[in-house]
Image (cartoon, rainbow, N blue to C red; front, side, top):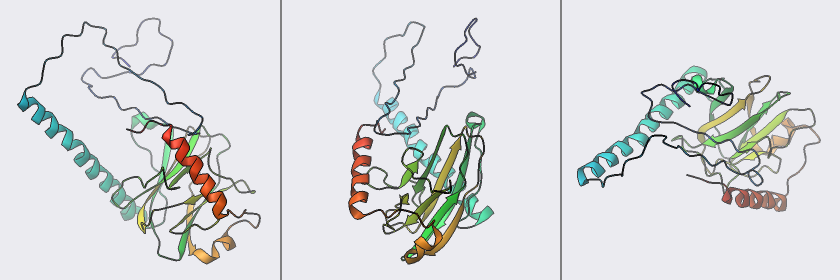
Length: 248
């Protein structure tokens, strides 16, 4: 990253505005238990002066500025969530692209809603070529639903694809006993976010709101049963893998 590309450099490079002072980096983890997070650092090529001791007023100012970050994020996320509901309603996905830095990524968010005894079945065709894809649940305040000790997200390394080549995932307050359960941790409303990254196509999934007791009527006949023992083993694997990832 630099204002001008170094002469003769042939590696990955991105132009950076001279007034830029923040760099956001996002890691995408596919197989949590096997992949290793990268190590990144920023090296100053100029001589670095001795870092001075902060005065009390400087510390207070930095705390004040730091507190603005979650406030600004909350305002932005609430506007995104409310915008989805205003444009397409409840339990409907909307394809979205964000910003110049995510040109290869297509999001498909929806505001979900269900009640006790109901389930939401997410169904989609799959791209033939996928660099990465995932689905995650957020609570009504746009926080990610607990994802270490609950199965609130899935991706291409974790999910089971149906025999007809489609992905089907089920949001339900109780375990539906089928593959790809997305556990909302008791929340009856929130957002579900999916993303296709660097795929050859970007299908738009649909959501079916059905009685929990009738879930299997809307799935292929050969959809396997997931026993409580199998679900417990799936969760143990998830917890073990998540512990090995760096979480900020």
